[in-house]
Length: 192
Image 1 (tube, rainbow, N blue to C red):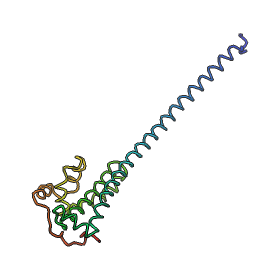
Image 2 (image 1 turned 90 degrees about the horizontal axis):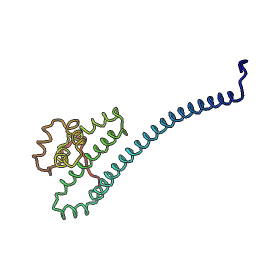
Image 3 (image 1 turned 90 degrees about the vertical axis):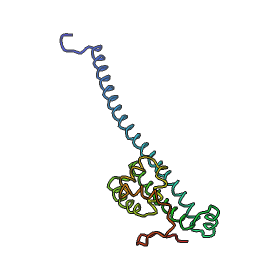
Image 4 (image 1 turned 180 degrees about the horizontal axis):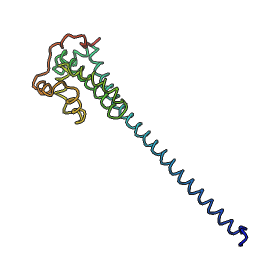
């Protein structure tokens, strides 16, 4: 054995050590790749979940809007509905439009919070949303319904969109308006 010749038993032991080493390294590499794959899958599932949530939220709001546009765009039905419920037709139309606009802002906010809209695009969205909250009727409707929205959305509207915090409290004191909204180039109308 002193002549440097490897005996068959020693060779088998060395071969077993080499195979064990290779198998261990392969298992460690497999563990790293499995871990990375699981991270990707978890992120895909999370993204799919938030996308589904956003789509569901949008579907609910779209169905709501479709239902009321069906009433708003059908004069006989609109007249029957408002009379049966003791509503002023014009005021109810304005209230529904204000509701649609607020719900549209909600969809954008949910899409931002769920990372469907990036921050750079959300800044432009906020500018548009701020202009909506400059309409007296939208502010009045917000004052009536703000407490039914989530705390985070309510805080977003009140800190990021409303011009002054006092606007919301002043509007709460005002009764719903039945006057025509101001005539601007952004005036909304229902097409029958």
